[in-house]
Length: 338
Image: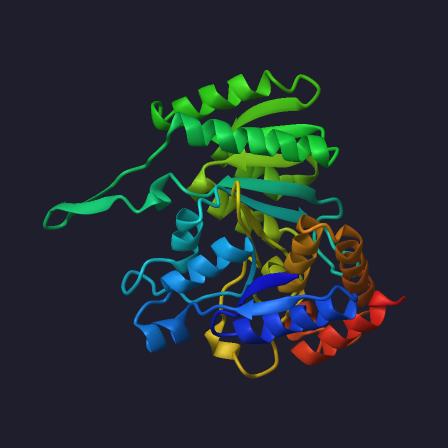
């Protein structure tokens, strides 16, 4: 089985190689096809996301991706945004659940954030009207809105989830979020066996901070999803910097292609020091295995991660330990056979 591997930059090569080791230890044979992206690609090719990388994913259909640095306010556009738009990866899926062995203020977090991945303000439609005045277009189309909400309901149906919450700000953005809300209500009518609720996004943030146990599947537009997925990750985080971003897996789905990646950044300040926590990428690889029909192997990885966190041996600094990327990877591999 051939799968594209995008190592990325910063800690990307370290955490993706850890994930590859764990996948190999399950016995699933993967021929990793490396594809360039990020700072190394920009240096070598003058382009952070070469067209050949997109073509590789189009050929092999599935990719595992490490974090890539995006310059803030200058330089090239986000690689993630370009990847999602170039491959029409319209659905971002981020499962967030409390992990045994990680002390947090919340005990019963088990939710999935589903984010529309191609439109909204992240469509990149902005320009300078006159000097000192910049305009950004928040793009919402009926087709994309219906597609992402239906995806969320289908995900809920297949995973036995009972509630879908649509997050919006239709009281302020009456046309754009008004259209999205109209589409959500129409799609919800096709799933009478799944509970549906609609909530303003600010209310959702407040309720997540107070008691996240009341949420199941949340679906929303691009920018809201970017914010809420990181907020949700913080609910299950460890004591170190970055919190739950080192634990939460991620997946991006289109009709033909899928790219699996962690939600955290490239952390160039710790690159090469052996401090990086690979769990988020390892769990993203578990989602990838489920997607390609190796669900049992993916479930074994999930169980091994839980055992590793419960044992507390070899954990990285962000999890309160003094271990390294290598030690925690070796513990996960050891626990695959437990």
